[in-house]
Image (cartoon, rainbow, N blue to C red):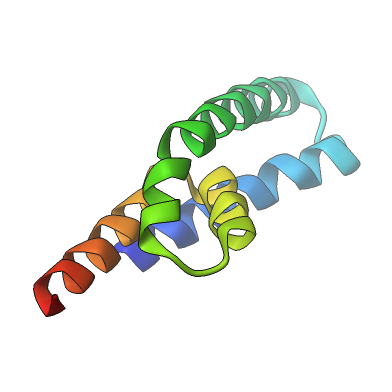
Length: 90
């Protein structure tokens, strides 16, 4: 399920970046432009909010930060699963 959320987010980012590089024109251009700005701002906030959890999860912190920015809450759910598995093993 998390993979599906990440895939949907990646498709959204792809459409937004494609629109920024090659404007689609019309109302869709405007919608994607402002959606991209909002998504970037929201994911930047999520990245900083969930970064302490990423530190607890271990692994490459830079990669976690990039994934938190790109996928937002979907990567946070993956971190929750990782921490739960680590706690269950301890």
